[in-house]
Length: 226
Image (cartoon, rainbow, N blue to C red; front, side, top):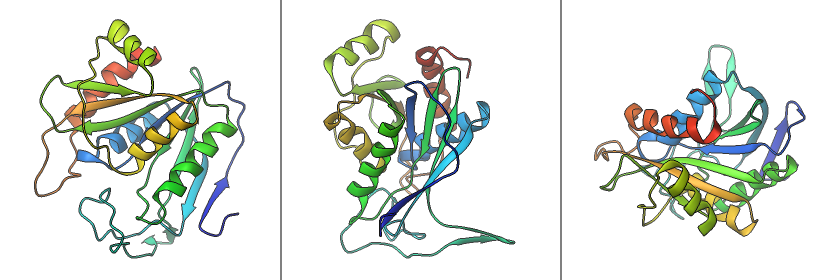
């Protein structure tokens, strides 16, 4: 167990090159909401939890994905009746098709790269060859667009699903780092960005309509009914 980051394995299912799905509380919480829905819809089973001393309970930055070297947040736990829970990243799995779902959590400035690398280590233990990241974008254009780690995937998204590569700019936080670092590990990755209207008062305020659009396209890509 690492001093700062460790994984608590709950089970070890046999999966055949599962597709990894990744989301976190980013813009309008689109990625997190999508993963939450998938876990419930697919009745996915909890397989592991990743903990880190770099996970604040309370973020000093707003939004939480805007890390800052001098604003590391407050540590602590959440208490509900007799339950005590640390901030964590949860991994669930489902079969037919084989999927690994990561419900992400933003690390502070000092730990964000190490946490993203640990998540990819976990994916590689299960021989993940393809990853789909789910997020939001606040720009103009179509209701959904995509990005990918190589031109072949981009062409596939255009030809098979009519998706355009419209997103240009920064991709902050946990999901952005996992997406970027996956390219360095040669994990084929795409990101589906649901268009949303940024909320100036609360950047992570949920946008369920954008989630519905992402699920529509995700159903086609995974060939399952969502």
